[in-house]
Amino acid sequence: TSASVVTVDYATSDGTASSADYTSASGTLTFNAGVSSQTFTVAVKADALDEANETVTISLSNASNATIAAGSSSTTLTITDDDATPSLSINDATVAESAGSAGLTVTLSAASGRDVSFNYATSNGTATSGSDYTAASGSYTISAGNTTQAISVNITNDTAEESTTAETINVTVSNATNASISDAAGVISITDNDGFNGGTSLTYTSATATSL
Image (tube, rainbow, N blue to C red; front, side, top):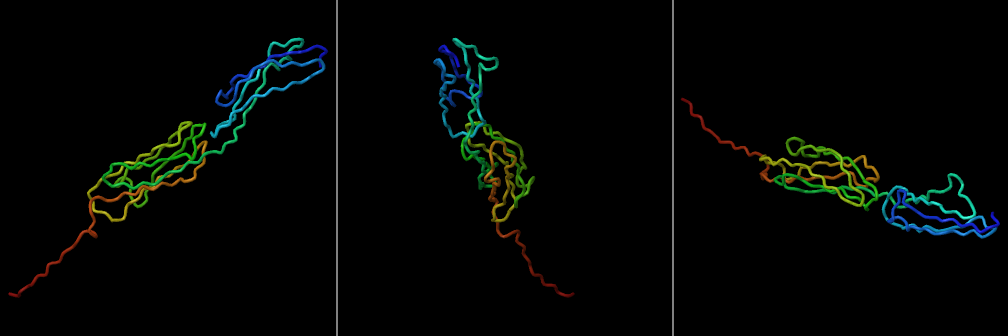
């Protein structure tokens, strides 16, 4: 404590947090004689985005009737995130064989404050890669603040008569970062456009033989 009145200025500045995360604060703290501590408040703004913990820098300057100890002119306020991690899901789709491609959508349950990435890959259901569709795989990133990513699979339009039951392609989502996966399995159903009459028909014509 001091026998004299001590004052010191304080101010906040962005660390990894920005004005969207907190309200900036600055002012002067006054320590009357015999007083050894003072407090001030930094207002934190709540949001619904899953994000990393963020920081605010608090600096002291212009001390009067006191010195600022070495290494004590600044400190870090950490804002701990308390929002749930969003989840990914993929839908199903039905397309005609003549469509050329089928589109599925991977959707986040809520927008995130972080980029969300995932892998995807097709596999045979009752459809066959190479003859009914073109196999596809890869990775996508849903940028922070967005909630959807489209996936396209090329469909082969052939002239073969096929079953009236739609052929299927499996599309699987895996290896998500910054999100969980609530529905990893999408199914593309391909409806035939060539007609089906129960298969190729066979005819038999009777013949009569006469002995010579």
